[in-house]
Amino acid sequence: MIELSEQQSIANGRVALVTGAARGIGLGIAAWLISEGWQVVLTDLDRVRGSQVAKVLGDSAWFIGMDVADEAQVTLGVAEVLGQFGRLDALVCNAAVADPRNITLESLDLAHWNRVLAVNLSGPMLLAKHCAPYLRAHGGAIVNLASTRARQSEPDTEAYAASKGGLLALTHALAMSLGPEVRVNAVSPGWIDARDPAARRAEPLSDADHAQHPAGRVGTVEDVAAMVAWLLSKNSGFVTGQEFVVDGGMSKKMIYRD
Image 1 (tube, one colour):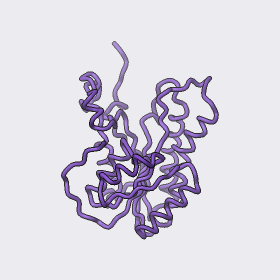
Image 2 (cartoon, rainbow, N blue to C red):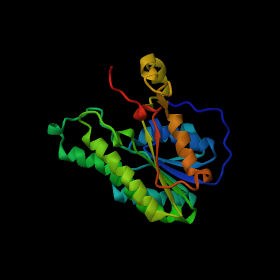
Image 3 (cartoon, rainbow, N blue to C red):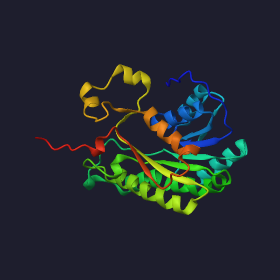
Image 4 (cartoon, rainbow, N blue to C red):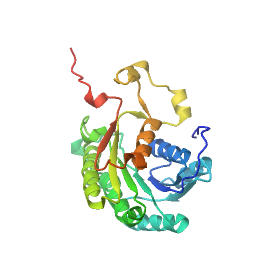
């Protein structure tokens, strides 16, 4: 399911809540933070997988099911975290609906549009709302996982692009409202190979996939996790309201054909 490094962690007493953490980037962030000594609460709609990965991650991981678009579930989940650990130092909003079907505008159902915005945009707002008092108490930080799709698009991705663009605006708005006690930043990944290790080995990406990136390769969940971990650390204490693009340089590359 997942593979962990042999790096040993030393508990640092801090508690982080990571949403959408049952797989992919969210799971990678959770594993990285645990390696740095964090106690991590993983949340996801997939309760079965979430519980499984929390067991694999060990004693520093704890799982609760949550639909981030449901304020009642967010309220209950945050209360569970505080009841279990008595504090909250960091919030990582990664849960998102990423629709690979690329629904055409003419076929875009309003219910689907509303669900994407509810999870991808309203969810981070609700989590910030209910976590803010506890983050303030410990000089905490929030990191929102946006996307390079907030600034560039392919056809038929209106709901996803709009939600991620809104998330960037929400990020700097929260930074102004919650500062100076709480810092709020966003990370915008590009192409990240977030598949499980077994799937990556079974179907490796092509040389052309990697070569098109100015950095020479497609990104990994660890690339994103390292940036998130830095933004949650005291080393980034003068950084708030910002977007950090982790895309191997693709969004700066001119792609006109000769």
